[in-house]
Image (cartoon, rainbow, N blue to C red):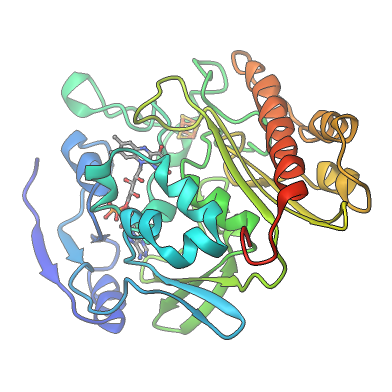
Length: 337
Ligand SMILES: Cc1cc2nc3c(=O)[nH]c(=O)nc-3n(C[C@H](O)[C@H](O)[C@H](O)COP(=O)(O)OP(=O)(O)OC[C@H]3O[C@@H](n4cnc5c(N)ncnc54)[C@H](O)[C@@H]3O)c2cc1C
Ligand code: SF4
């Protein structure tokens, strides 16, 4: 690992000011579970001169309901999310998604902000220097996308334009299903971005001197069934081949609202709108669940080696809708928000 300067910061302002002063030669470090691996592999073209530690910012790890919103500070750890009584009672999709990520040791250091901002897992992009890398590609600013003609079995089956790497963040998928928004702070003030819109074809909607401060989610008022399902190759510690987050509201046997978000199929979390529309206004039955799953992948365009993801995604959507149906029959008004 190359050497770098290490700077502790104690406020959000300190952090984005430091980012501005180093003019792109510094990187934020929260838990370090992704950043340090990238630095050890020496996969980036621009190795940072300075690491700005934000874990020293006090009070940025809150999880609280505040009037009409649930607010989670960017430094809340994934293990805090797994254990939070509030989330397990009313926003259990978040706790379930966090529980599927990595290992207890990693969840004890990894933060929500870092999970959303983690770098792509594309194996061409991550190819380490010590075994012949780094490999250049379009996302790194040099050359073309190697996945288009190469081994693209884990890449996007929809929404890929220039880069076909999928969004690796499971938390982004769950947050998108709950209409989460990122509060982003920087020298020009604070702005808010919907989680799904944060991910761009070649990166993220985050300037070099900005920091994710908070994740804001509309408070749940009506009980709904929340489900997070993830298909992986290995049982323990693996990224999603496909994931699905769903939030389905069933009132008097009829589906009144539905959000179905697909993960690891595109460079961003994908809202399966046609599948949602098929559910709304109807009692959920086996036929409706199957029809909804069939429509969920509308518009997909798999690459040469990843069409297998389509059937997996359809199966997960069907399972998620089934589990909503079963739970909806038993829903207690103060459980399962
Ligand atoms: C073995 C292993 C398995 C994993 N499995 C999964 C999985 O199944 N699903 C999944 O979703 N993830 C998985 N991950 C990724 C893991 O969740 C992330 O590494 C972790 O969440 C990153 O959080 P961190 O606080 O350690 O971020 P860091 O490593 O500190 O930062 C990651 C990136 O985000 C930037 N950053 C951090 N915080 C902010 C902020 N507040 N504002 C702006 N930029 C910021 C940093 O500059 C850096 O570029 C896995 C990781 C490992 C090592
Ligand atoms: S998918 Fe993206 S990160 Fe991977 S090789 Fe193509 S451009 Fe690079």
